[in-house]
Amino acid sequence: MAEEQTPVRGSRPFQPQPWRDRQLEVVLGNLLRAGVLFSAAIVLAGACVYLSRHAHEPANYRVFQGEPSEFRTIRGVIHAVRNGRGRGLIQLGLLLLIATPIARVSFSIVGFSIERDYLYVSFTVIVLLVLLYSFLGTGIGL
Amino acid sequence: MTILTFSVVVAVVSFVAGLLGSLTGLGGGVVLVPLLTILFHVDIRYAIGASLVSVIATSSGAAAAYVKEGFSNIRIGMFLEIATTFGALIGAFLATWIPTSALAIIFGAVLLYSAYLSREPRPEAQRNLPPDALATRLRLNGSFPEHESRRHYNVQNVPGGFGLMFGAGALSGLLGIGSGAVKVLAMDQAMRIPFKVSTTTSNFMIGVTAAASAGVYLSRGYVDPGLSMPVMLGVLAGSLLGSRILVRAETKSLRLVFSLVILVLGLQMLYKGFWGPI
Image (tube, rainbow over all chains, first blue to last red; front, side, top):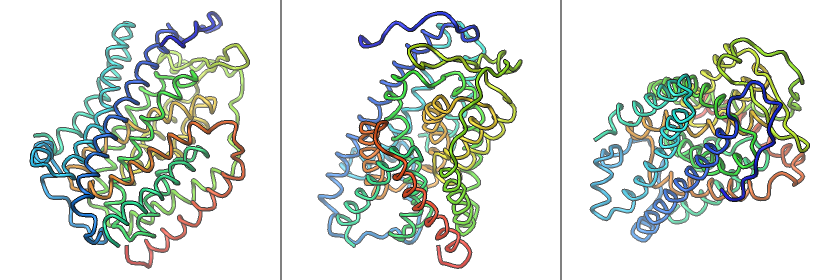
């Protein structure tokens, strides 16, 4: 954050503590990018394993069959990774990718709490609950 | 086609889609699903799952770059995410029982609308609008850097924007796209947010919105690792490169070409939805 400049002050009657907002956003932005690059690295590692084994098989996505349960649940994915499956590793990277916005929302709760903006703490909690429901309540949870 | 060839070709196409989507600001996700279904004969459900995942990657990957410019408004984003995440969850559940031909038709309509919207110049928000009581109470008003100082703006029509955002979230969950076009409608037109602020804030929101439906897609088996891998890596690399070369490049003719591509894909999706096998 060394490259951040002191913001111009004054002439902002309606926004409370914009400087803290911005600090918070910079931290969140970097957090998100790190999460994305990390998950992309895992997907890439999985791709190497997957392609080294299945490169010459025919690709067919014409018919929808739905993924087997090992690629649909967190437990299944972890199991597949332990067995050294390339596609399991890809799926793990994708799970981490889906988790980055969830981490961002969680950190926003902390940020708004520090600012004592309880209205936005409650808004953010609502968003987090929806995300957690989608992530854990629909069957991929353990 | 072997898995190796398929992966390489899909990665290259996704790279170009991510690059053009980022350069034109129209988003790469919107062309991915039609390209995968029309060119590669991928079942639309697999295509939607892969596109959704790549949308999260683009949004989260570009967030840091946007934040540095200081345009995005975290409060507007978080408040409207209540609407988009609920919408996305409902959209994702709808997608699991809507017939694929109907999905294709809705997709075609959204593409045509996006193409139309991209040809319209975006109206610059009027300056010095009076503060709206609800927006003030929700602390949505903000400011952004302009000509060495900061320009203040007052957000309007909060309920209208919130309702449209619910629709944007539902479309995102239903079709696996960022639905930037509807977000423009909500933030630029209804809430009168200056477009620099609305574009960057909307980018921030897209990842959270897509995450709300991604869980449903994953648990229903729509996210195929073999397909999502080249799509996600390609789109991410393309959009990261796009955000580097961005801004000062001549994008007007690029936008025209890209909106023509969107138009053609939209017509093809409609055709496939009504008459073709999908």
